[in-house]
Amino acid sequence: MSTPHPSDVGRLVHLGIGSFARAHTLHNTEVAGGWSVVAFTGRSAAMADALNAQDGRYGLIVRGAEQDEVSISEVVDEVFPASDVDALVRLLADPFTAVVTLTITEKGYAAGSDPAVSAPARIALGLKARREAGVTEPIALVSCDNLTGNGEVLAKAVLAELDEETKAWFAGHVDVVSSMVDRITPSADEQAADTVLARTGFADSVPVVTEPFSEWVLEDSFRGRRPEWEKAGVQLTDDLEVHELRKLRLLNGAHTLMAYAGQVAGVERVDEAIAHREVRALVEQLWAEARATLPLPADELDAYTAALEERFRNPRLADNLIRIAADGSVKLPVRALPVIAELGGPDKACGEVAAVAAWTAWVTDRVRGGQEVQDPKAEQITAAVALPDHTERVTALLALLDVAAGDPLVAAVATEEKRLPRP
Image (cartoon, rainbow, N blue to C red):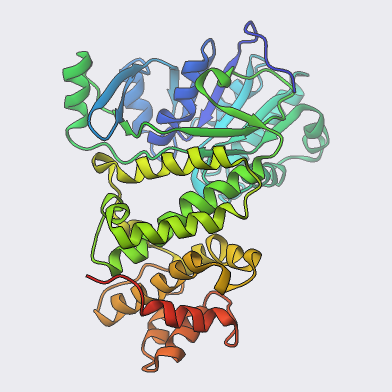
């Protein structure tokens, strides 16, 4: 695809303006320069009121390991509540609007056909108006939500809401672009507004706190205008899948391992887990195994894991392991089990086996200690943990991951459980 000419400016419409969008998608758009940005809120209209009262400005606090960098963003021109469907339809029918970005969470793509509550349904109305207005220039819909194949999910949701004429028009006039996003953006603490005021003199009611690291990889499939996101370090690629896999197996895989092994070892936060000698060794083993499944240059993978370690060690942005530990029965089958299979079995993937064993040990400790396990299979986990025999318990827990009773992974996990670091 051709790189957009610097004179190719336009309007970007963003749906779902929360902290992540302001720290990531809209920040990158501001660095790219030249584009008008109009945003819509998610479920609550409060952000529209707050940002409009500040002329769209907000403080961005980049929280490094030792100090904060504070800047004022002025990228947003106007914010509408999600309920203002007419405003969105009007904007999408305007040929100056060339890109729509979304951070509506995974649930937002399955919100149904009522435009009052469904972003895909609202977009469908806007695209119908664009067709009826005779606009010929392509418009790009870009999902910035943290789910694999997010462009396919978005396209399916929007197409389901289109009338037949607009559905026929869609392929010739709409690009749906997948992207891979990554930037930790926790809720702003009570001191964030004070920090912005002290450093900039700007009284901000909705500051954003984020980490120094930021990554955005986009499919290079734009036919129309788009911001020059490359100026912000955004990467455009013809192979997004390998970048999604890199994140899933290195970042998410390490997070999952630390969430369980760290708590079994007696620590509570990510920075404590990566600093724990034995847990850190398990992470390095998992990374070595996952890297062997990724067709990317070694220097790129070195840089990525080095950046991950720096992020994990940041004590001023430390995440609680208990939060990351949720939904293990959903995460392990996509983060650990495929690597074990691709490498040829559990004896070739000790680090990934440790991640699974840490989960079985952790849920056992939690349930037997009378504590809750947040998981869609919580009831089945509780029943499995009640089994007194060690091997039977592990077998029943792995069955919840669709691992057969005779699979070599069962014996490997049963053995690895006993080797995990303890307090």
